[in-house]
Image (cartoon, rainbow, N blue to C red; front, side, top):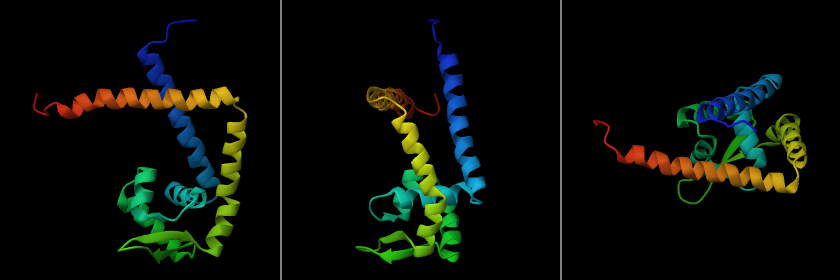
Length: 153
């Protein structure tokens, strides 16, 4: 087996991430949704418990402004509503119309993801997660050094 350099690894990884992003972008267009609106619906449908806007922003790694724009559109169209939680927390929920939209859009995506998951052997599933977790841990450790260094050096 040929030695894999960092540059080859980086290029192949970037291509795969772009391909995956492109796949979900294409799905959003297929369903007539913006990517942000698709990801909001996806998160609300897949989450086992109610989600706040802050949690949604964190989960999606999108700015509050971007998520708020998508939420406003979904709320105006009657797909989501807010409910009061403890303190000043507001939880996002799919309405009946929103659940019907998620059934037509998000559910087929979740089913495809599950079938792809089941296409991996049990050991492959565990290895994939373990390797991604290890790489992220190593990368986090390396970037900590960047954050600790002065910007002026």
